[in-house]
Image 1 (cartoon, helix red, strand yellow):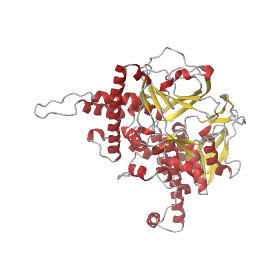
Image 2: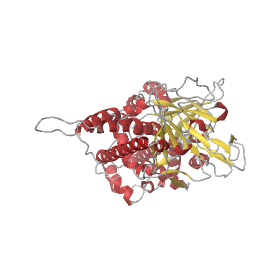
Image 3: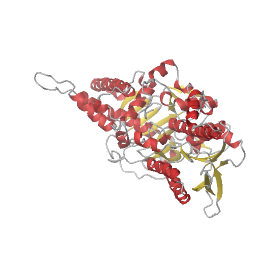
Image 4: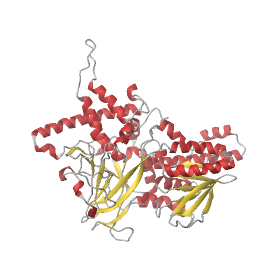
Length: 561
């Protein structure tokens, strides 16, 4: 079977790799001049913090863009894939600082809440500040324990009715719970509910700790976090509790991931990985399959198009690009009277229209002025403007862009301090979504990306993005197609699901041709031992016995995992 995968981010690369593992003939098509998963990464000289941009140097140091660290509990499939590829994965307990325009107000010591926090340096400048910092710390500890308990209840469907709606947003969750905590007890005799400060404490916790943290995790605005289904947030809290973050071992980068995943496709021949190639359109191929119209991406004057005919197409691109290509295919299906496939494509287009994106800016630089005081600096430093426009007016420039905080557009700025292996090297700062100006003379690279937001109603939207049939021509892969916050795990998970669906369709057609009825095929399907997709042990990334027990749930029919 011939399959074309359009897009070479992690979703496209993983899909192509898994298909080749099952013997499919696969084309990988990418508009850029390099594979998408590492196209924004930069190469540095470890001693001079000078970008090399592909030049061969003995002290080459690749910095992935964006950050490629990930958390074990939320990324079991990604961990399994990296383990299968033989890539060294190193656990690390990132520490975090939380700052505003006034000061650093919280230090997180890592281990996803399983370690003791530290106090910011300002707390030690006077007895009253120390007392206030300790009281705030106790309040955060109380709220965090409450959030853990609620995330456990959500995982097992034990939430109270006021918090259990699948469409309940983070904002509504915060309001409901803060209201309850403000008046948690009702005295029966006199009918009064005494006020407590716990409601304000929890609201402050959500607004100053949870909000910037998830704004950074999902690279989204504060308003996007508030509008996100709270079940996604609670699931993230539950699955990551006590787990380590991970990154690739020294000397390895996203370039190695892309190289290993693309290798089986390249091994077919020189024309199977098509870089710098535009997909002009998709057309139904009479007799079955899809004709893909291709054109060199950099040659805008060339009108000549190449046609590639395949039996299946996997769209591993942004939702807007996939929607445009599917609407183009719909016209062709209508012309040939393929109404069943048109209905399937129509559902996909309907689902794609609900997917929203946010622009993300990633700046690699050496401007330490945007960091908190030295005593408060940690591995990842979050800066969250608590009020719109608290900063002096400075015009954003192409060499040093940033998001000016406004009432409807506030991001959490995350700056990771990246250290080279060389002892005489200088650290590089990677700032995601800067909200203050970075000195242009200290900027090493600027990347502008788009990141998908979590869909607002996954129970309705995610089923629309599925192929809907074993005879489907089109499949969608990408972080937005998979349940949860759109991250790298969704790229791998959706790719695995696509390949599983294609394999089931192929088995069905083979056994149908042998004269077996659908009922007989279904019985055999449930009776036989199904080989894991790609021959990969997908259980490796789930961790040990304790972690598996913590993430066990009695109700597995969920949209949340």
